[in-house]
Image (cartoon, one colour):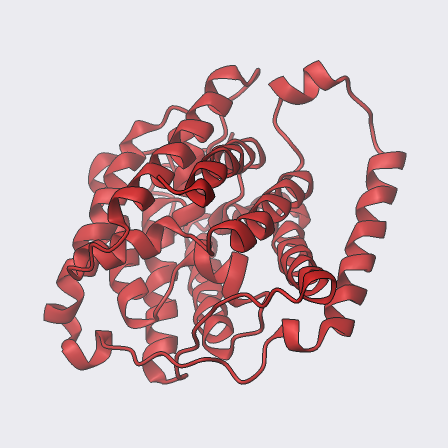
Length: 323
C-alpha cells in the first residue's frame, strides 16, 4: 500500500463514523422537512457544499493545490439519471450515503443495496443502450477553486454560523459526544474536513464510483478502493455499536427485496447521470460542475415527490417508521 492510501484509511474510517452519527442522508433530509417540519438536515447538505468548496479554495490559495476533476456534458440523460437516482433512493429508504449510515446502525439488509447498486450499473447498458451510459469526460474550464473569493466568503459564513451554534447551543461532555447521535451540521463539518484532506493526500474517493468502475470492467486500483470501502463501513458499524439511544433510521424500515431493488435503480441512475449522492454532493456540487447540479436537482425533485407520497394517505400501505 502507498503512504497516501495508508493515511487515507483512518480518514475514511472517521468519515464512516460521522456519516452514521449524523445520519447524513438526502432522503431523511426531505423526510424531516415533510414529516417533522425541520430543515436542519437539509441545511447540513448546504453546509457541505460551503465547507468543501471553501476548504478546497483555501488549499488552492495556501499551497497552489488544484483538485483533479472531470466534467461531463449536460444532456437529457443528466435529468433522467437524476430522476431515476432519486426514485431508487426513495424505494431504498436511503440514498447511497444514508445506506452506509443505516448499515452502521445495524440494519444489515442495506448491504443488499450495495449489491443491487452494482447490479444496476451492470444492467444499465442493456436497459438504456451503450450510448446513454458512455460519457466523454473533459477537464472543466472553471470551478469554484478558480474563483476562490466567493468560496472563501461562504467558508467564513458557515464557520461563523457553526461557531454561534456551538457556543449558544446545548453543551455536552466529550464522553457524551462520543456516545450519542450528532447534529448533522456537526457531522458534515467533520466529513468535509476529512474529505478535503483526503482529496489532497489521495484523491476524491466515493464508493459508488468504485462499484460503477467494477461493473464496467475497470479494475484499476480496485483492491485499494475496496479496502477504503471496508474502512468506511467499519467506521459506520463502530459508530452504531457504541452509540447510546435509538438507532438511526430513515422513512422506511429495511426490507431485503426493497433494498435490492432500490439499489439497482440507483445504479441505473448513476450510470446514465452520471454520478450518485456521495461523489456529487461532496465534490461535484461544491466545485460548481453543471452536470452535478443538474443530476442532483433532478434527484431532489423525485425524492421530494416520493417522500410526499410515502407520507400521504395513498402511501399509507407502505409501513413508514421514524427513529
